[in-house]
Length: 433
Image (cartoon, rainbow, N blue to C red; front, side):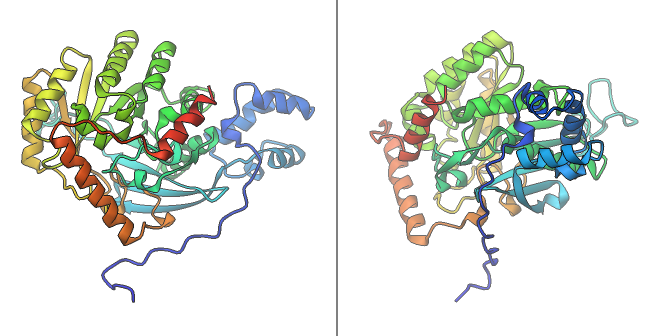
């Protein structure tokens, strides 16, 4: 019998038939020109096609009316104009947050979150020269930030994150990453607005799909394609040290964010299982070198969990770890996740933690959670139509987390191996370099 207090879950859609055609938005430089040459078409058609993909956000080749019918038919035979088979949008926060569930051609489900930030004080009478409005808060222009996924599921398995409970599905193709952006841009265009920021903080570990992520960032920052400046892009990682070092070598202009969550190895072993491979000091050392070479400040994300990682001891350990670095810490109260026994730190505790970091010379910002009532907040992306794990599995998971955290609180390092999904994902990454 269904509990009437529990919202009915939508049935899963029929699994589509995988489409072997590559996504048009993800073609590498020169790829479109090469195809046009093979079709006996003039090179100038590439600009018309790109305009259709990136300026018009066309959903199908038939919408490219500047092209002759035969060329439109050829495009449709060879490419997918859109790699997302279906969208389901849930709105939260009075319309300020939109979570999109994307169905891909092989049935994989991923999510993206579009967050709207209205202008505050900018250009308004009474705004001061110090960059603050009459209410004393900092001014800013209207912003529209999209949080996108780079993988279906996630192999890292952080216990406070619903995505990690799904396990790892597969890497996303470049076009599948970019088409999340195109879908959001299409919705914004209807309200005469545009994307101002893109963050790779959705489902998956971006640096375990780094080649595709870099291709996507290149397309986002290319004036001939999406045209968003690289400095408006943030790429997050839970601490894939070889990936951080590779980024440092290419000296990107986007911002690197580290999902840190603990400054002590015993605790981070539990909160971020990847720490068992690359301990926190090694992660921060790689990030420090990245900041030194690029001149770009590294952002550290820190989920605040009551009684777990929010003590004065943790604040002091974090201050000591980051002392003297070009870094900033974003404190994020943990969002509710079914399989986790923990709770978010209280607002008072978060404020005290931030103050202690600042006293230690570390810049800190408390982030306001968005999209909780739609399962769109940080750590909640779980493609909910994929189904929930059975109750016994949830109970077992909670017991395991409790045991692991008790060991960590005693200061003992984890003796467990990496999760199997993570080992497999990392093995796959080595083969892709």
